[in-house]
Amino acid sequence: MLRRAETAELAAIAALIARHPMQLLAMGEDWLAEIAADPANRVMVWDRGGFAGFAIIETAYPQVLTLPNLAVTKAGEGRALIAGVLELAFAEMGAHRLFLDTVFDNPRALEAFRRAGFTEEGRFRQCWLRPDGLWADCIGMAILRDEWARKRSEDAAALAP
Image 1: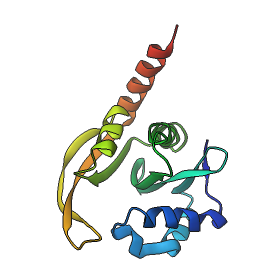
Image 2: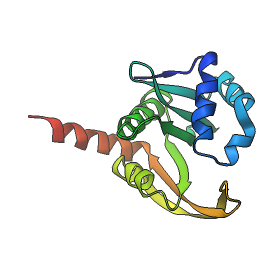
Image 3: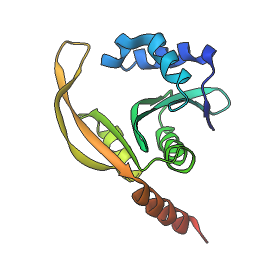
Image 4: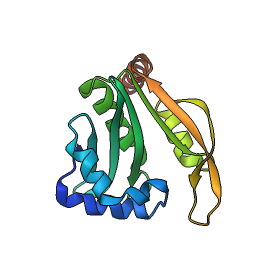
């Protein structure tokens, strides 16, 4: 279940971010609290009988959302979390577009986003500072409302008896 994070859970989210170091880390828990306090944004917890991950959704422009960070605590939860984020962004938040970037050499993330319906839109050169001090390129991806609706219908039809 995807639900809004409570203030007490921001430390757990920050700890999970710390396991996957990136530039956002420098912003810390204060940044998370600011994002969570803005009603246009969402800091969400993936709850599977306990904290199993999180997703942060920010409003970049009206009806244009960005997904700056999400992570799960164990393998196999990512697909369901992404589906929950898409449902929230389009069905509840009224998004027209949801975009993100992920490091170029994370094939599991790239494939998970592709399977969810995201399209690669370009490469951002040296946008991620790794813990070893080297810069890595990121791949920009997005999904539009009509693409999400079509994919959602196709997935539902595939499950129908």
